[in-house]
Amino acid sequence: MTAAIARRSSLAGCAAVLLALLCTAPTGVVSAARAGRQDATDAQHGTGRTLYLKYCSQCHGEKGDGEGYAAIHLYPRPRNFTTGKFKIRTTPNGALPTHQDLVNIIRRGMPYTSMPAWSIFTDQEVSDLAGFITTFSPEFSKAENAPKPVPLASGPRMSKESIAQGKKLYEESGCVKCHGMLGRGDGPSAPTLTDDWGHPIRPADLAQSWTFRGGSAREDIFRTMSTGLNGTPMPSFLEALQPEQRWAITDFIVSLSGTGPGYTNLVIAKHVDDQIDVAKGTANFESARVARFPIIGQITEPVREFHPPTTSVTVQAIYDAESIALLVRWHDMSAEKTGKNGPLLPVPREEEEQPAGAPAGGSGGASPGGSNGSVFGDQEVAAAPAGQAPAAGGAQDPFAEPAAPSAVASEFSDAVSIQIPSQVPTGVRKPYFIFGDSQNSVDLWFFDLARPSPLQFTAKGSAEIAPNDTGDVTGVASYDQGEWSVIFKRPLRPDSGAAFSPGQFMPIAFSVWDGVSRERGNRRGLSVWYSLYVEPEAVPSVIGPMIETALVILAIELMVIGWVRWRYGSRAREARGGQPTQQPAASI
Image 1 (spheres, rainbow, N blue to C red):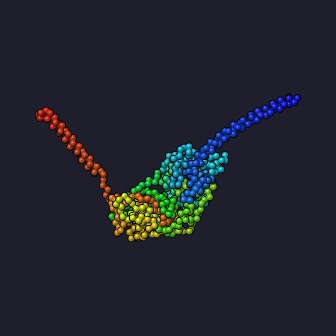
Image 2 (cartoon, one colour; image 1 turned 90 degrees about the vertical axis):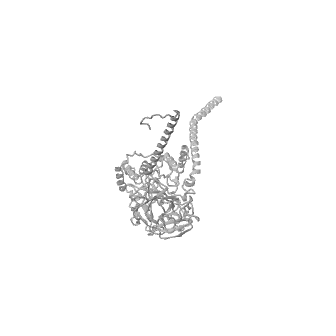
Image 3 (cartoon, rainbow, N blue to C red; image 1 turned 60 degrees about the vertical axis):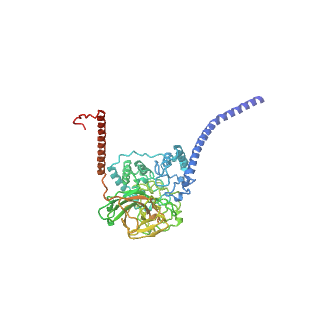
C-alpha cells in the first residue's frame, strides 16, 4: 500500500514537472523574443543617443527640452521634443510626425535657422537618431497616437488662371491679415501674433520662398497648407479648402517670389543721361540691374545679433555726370519711424544674454515649451479660413479680427547704412568689414529712418566712429506694403573721401537695423564686403572688334598659304633644273 502510494506520488510529481515545463516553455520563448527585440531597441537608441549627445544636445538639451547651453542665442528657439509638437509633418494638424518626417528634417535641415542639414550621417544613423528623438515625449508610446499621413493630392499644372484663383482665395481665406497683400509678412495681425508659449512670432515672408523652412517646392508649400504648423497660429486647410483650392493658393505663393534669391557679389552702377533727382524716388532706377546680397548676424564683436530679422537686401545703382545714387530695399514687418538709432548707440552686455526672439520691450523669457520658430520665413503664420477653429493648441484664433498694434512707440527706429573705404584701395587689402580698422578707415553713410536725411561718419572700427557730416550724402526713404526703399546720393568726386570713376570697382558693404527688435549700434544685421562696378558711359560693342580680329586672322592665313605655295613652287623648279613650266591659266 505504501509502495503504491509512493509510486503514484512519484508519477504525479513527474506529471506536474512535465506540465510545468510544457506551460512555461512558450513563455520562455516569448520572453526571449521580447528580450531580443528590447536589445535591438536599446542598441538603436544607444546609437541614436550617442549621436544626439554629440551633435544635438548643445541646442536641444540633454533632456530634449530645447534648453541646451546654446539655445539662449538661437532664434527661432530649438525644438522642445518633450511636447510632441512638430511643425514639418505629413500628418493631420495636432498629430505626431511619422518616422520619415523626422528623418527628412534631420537630413534636410531648416534653412535660415541654426538647424543644419546633416549630410554626414548614414541613412541608418539618421533613422536611429529619429527613433531616439521620439523617446523624449510619452505621446509617441501611446498606440492611439500612431501617426497616419494625410492624403496629399498631386498638383495640376501651374498656370496664370490658377495663380489668379489663388490670389482671390488668399484674400478670402484671411491670409492677408498676417502675411500682407504681397506676402511680405506685414499684415495687420502680424505685430500681435504669438506661438503656443506666448512668444511673439513673425509671419512668413511669402515673397522669399528660399527661406521656407519646410521646403520651397510646390509640394512642400501644399503640404504645409494641408497639415498646418503645430504650435503656431498656422492652421490646417485640409478640411476648409478643396485640394484644387489649396493648389491654387500654393501657385499664388510661388508666384510671389520666383525661383530663388539669386545672390551675387557685384552691383553695377549704370550711367543715366538725366540728372538724378531723389525726389523721383525709385523711378530713377528703372534701367538699373538688381543685385541681392545676404544679410547675416553680427556675431564677432560684443552685443552681438545672432539672428537678425532682415535676411537680404536688394541694391541698384546709377550715376550721372556729377553724382552716384544707390537704392537699397528690404522687407520689414513694420516701419519703425520713431525713436532713435545710430552706429555708436551702446547696448548693455546683459541684453546679449536675453533669450533670442524677445518681444519689442525686451521682456521675453525662456519659453517653457521652447519657441518653435519658423517654417516659411522668419516665422510661420497664416490666418484660418472662415468658420474654422484655430490650430490645435494654438495660442489664439488667427482668423479673429486683428488686434490693434501696441500704441507704445518703439524706443529704436529702423536704420540702414552703406560703407565704402575712405580711400580707393590700391591693393587687395580692404578695411575690416565691421566698420573699418585703425589703419584703414571707412566712409559710413548712415540713415536713421526716423530722420528726414542720412548722416555721414568716419569709422576706424566699431568702437571709433566720428561724425563727418560734410553734407555730401543726401537721400530719401519710404515704406510701402512691407518694404523699405532707401536712396543714398553722393557726388562722384567729393571734396574728401573716395571718388567713383567709370571702369572702377569699389568695395561696398551694408548694415540694417530693425528697431522693433531693439537693434542699434553693434547689434545689427550686416554684409561682408562686396563690389560696386561703375560701368563706363558707352559700353563698346563687341561685334566690331570681333569682325576686325576675324579679318586680320584671315589675312594672315592667306599670306601664310601664299608663302607656302611659293616656296613649294620654287623647290619644284630647282628640282627640274630651273626650267620654267607653263602653268594652267587658272593656277594660283
